[in-house]
Length: 437
Image (cartoon, rainbow, N blue to C red; front, top):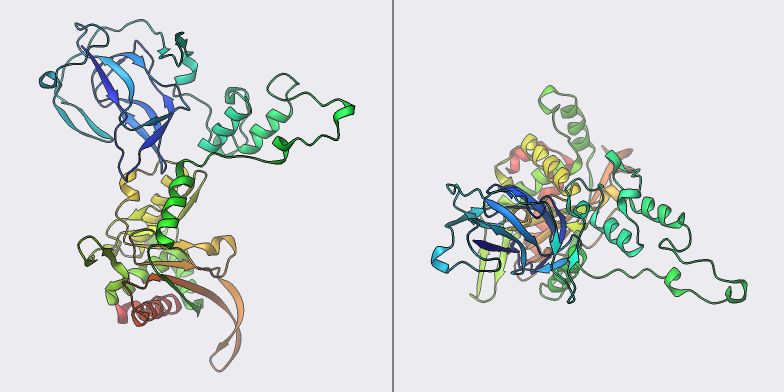
């Protein structure tokens, strides 16, 4: 019996995904929930587990293809007794249970059809059959990021020929550009122009056009929606955080915190949770259809992360229950997953308040835009050694600027100001956490 697997809805309103790789070929026998490939949504690279146990009969799209949710991407023979192309009746469809990305067959299924020959045929875009080499769909592809793979496709570069100079052999944009620039004319680059045409302007060399898709497309839509829906107010507070930085230095040297990375962001995360407990309006959302303000009694703390794929905001679930060590561990895990492009859609959903750390780029302050649906976002500026009033005199102190944007429909000026003051108090003197918490 031939069954088709359609690209599942990966959540968060995503309507399309790009096929990154296939880890199986036509003729392979696969097990239930075996990883068969990877797809890239606008938010993350997601592994696809097989929804059936059977033999791969067709792979509908080659890597690099953008596929709409609901399109058939791969087919399986789960019994071997039905003509190719038949769709099983609804009442004969295997029992489906939740998997990582949708629904798969009942884990108790024991169907294991015989293995077939290893050939890969993709559906033709014209009347002629298209045969794609197996090497294109194997999981052992060169390591690179989606933008770099796009650049390589645009320049006609086979990443298998490129030596990666990035971390652990990662192929970078510079590697692709350098390889493309060193190729002979006719091998994916244009031949030098004759002398008589040297004054002609080659606009293709003067401009780079990048399709608006993926993370950039989603981020743009979200920021426009937020900026023109929620009335933003931004307040600033500059704080002497010397005591807070000294505490972090002492904790780094302790055995209890040896397994985690402590940064100003860690302390700010704890301060935000304390501030929200005192000003819960910062942890609310506007429910227009029901004419209600919904205040959450939990904090799913979003952390803006700059990744090779663009800006994403995964969140730490129930951050209010974590101490400083727990927050440091959660931040480390979140950052590592985001950098690897493996953040699951579930980690990007349900945020209630966000922090963006612009200080790591040497920036002091800004006016952050709210993550859609959230009431507040805090930007952390750089920690700088600054002459500052201290104990009746002037001393060189460690100073940081905090920038708070909030939705004025949900948060009054007094509430926003008190929240920012509480966060600043904890950053300036962590002992205040005992008094405020």
